[in-house]
Image (cartoon, rainbow over all chains, first blue to last red; front, side):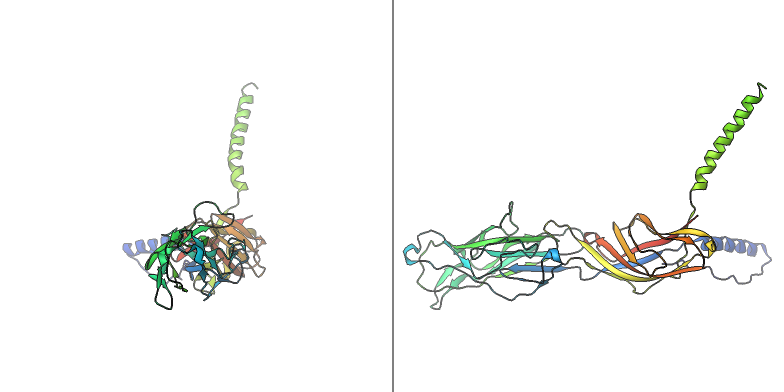
Length: 226
Length: 161
């Protein structure tokens, strides 16, 4: 870090030729050392270099990104539902589903990105140091079916979603898809150090006739960083 | 008379050449790195944190910043009772572009410096053997360049008047 100051010279008494030569070498080194310029070196270490944030439905942020916002935890589980009238049951016309989520504005810039009750906001980021990494994956863990109290079921694959965003063009980070009948499926990805968001509009395919009842199921979304 | 004229012209020519060689070097200040071996950092290392926890949509805005306090003690004995200019020099270095900004207690000037450059922190007479100040430094670097702990070196240098 710093060059050491030249040490004080000890008295040296030598009379032989070799001793004189050593003295000369010592004198030469002394000159070099005293001429060595010092520089200061600071050691920089990344603290908390990684962070992830995923919001499906409502989320929590202290403020928008543009105002130095910080993400927080939100344990709310939002609902998406559809009531199919008896007259159209199973006729193959997809039934629009609505949500109880109130999330419309992006926490990035407060822009009204999604519309409720027809869309569910999904967004987040993966923060990490270093060069761009493999994308972080968002997966959905899906039960085999929606079930009712009587034990009847509707396959989860009867539900699909479209993806868009107000004023958005191009490919969505969380594209359109259809649920699998049980299992874990990829529903999107995030490049490192980018904010990603989409709005999902769910619909029930309505191409079969299940027994009357209220069918429910819970899908869990997970963000996995590399 | 006829022969003397070319000789005078020749002497004038050589004088002009000599002066043209001497003048540029005399106008350039001599730069010497200052011994700062008495300088101490109050923190052993600088913790770099994201300036904004959240990234942007485009992937820009990945600055990391960290602060450190430095008790600067410059040995200016060689320039005592003379005048000079002291610069803080931050050479270009790995992992890439680095910015340092600093506040002072008043002995040196506050400022901002990007790697590969130097900036004036003092100009005037050197009245004491040591020049001391406490600097609060803020380091800024693109987080996408940071792969591991890394050193940043800088030094003070004197331009003699």
